[in-house]
Image 1 (cartoon, rainbow, N blue to C red):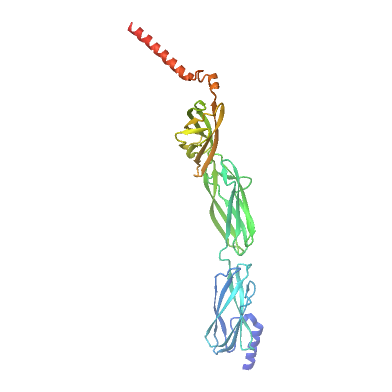
Image 2 (cartoon, helix red, strand yellow):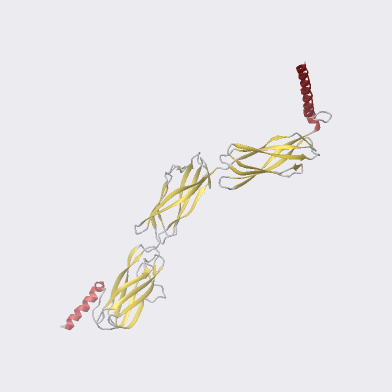
Length: 409
């Protein structure tokens, strides 16, 4: 009777297969006590260290015990890793720790995937299978904003720009339902979308794949030149359906450089071999202030600078002007011509970027004959202006004497 019962149990184990996965009859009874794997969760495209603790729950020792790991997709063993572990004798209640280095396929779907461990006792013993789950999930499902580019870099107030976001899937699994949104609702944000909404969508990105999202924006004409922080929201889902949300900020630059004009406002009348002054005027016709303005007069073979060659102006507001005076001695060989006067203006804009601009002005040099002709000097070489001044003084003196005589009488 006992022999028949034992035979029936053996038949049940053979036919039952996985139904008897956790126990086996006879003089040994193995059970998986615990499974540990690192990293947890297992990551697609990487290795995990698997530790399986089994224990002989039978009442008699198990001899010639053999354990074999049976990995199946998405798990595998490298060719140099032995799936079979042999033990000569395992006493009752004695635990055994089985260790394996298991590769996880890079395309593994997030979630639980089963792996099998089979064992037998004796060289001709029956195999029994124990199954357990391994949880697979990318440690960090990362959708990265690799680059933000504005074309042009400096957006002119009232101008348009293309703002491109390059997104890259840094995870080992596919990312889906990607949405990128720019928040331009704040009244302090002087931007608005052109030809589209503030939201863009991408259906999916494979591991390592990049895609560029384009927004076309326009700035308000009255926008103050500075950096504006635009909040952005990035949402996406992994293959397991988990949704992620990332909030960040992108800076857009509105720039409006000062615009400097320089011209010769006034000059003395120069002949070759004479000295005098020139007054150079600078105007800022740009929309923003020019800071730390200075002007330098360049040396020249045509003239000698008498006194300082540099004037510091300071700040020059929009629609404002200032002047600088320089004293020159003109080379005596010059006659009836125009000579170039080179000046360099240096200033900083609203972002403290330095600008250096060169300007070429013209200074007329007259001949003696021309000045006599136009009455600037007399034929004997004196200045008509001086003669007029002397005459005026004499006339005033005569008027004064007449007035005094009348008063006495």
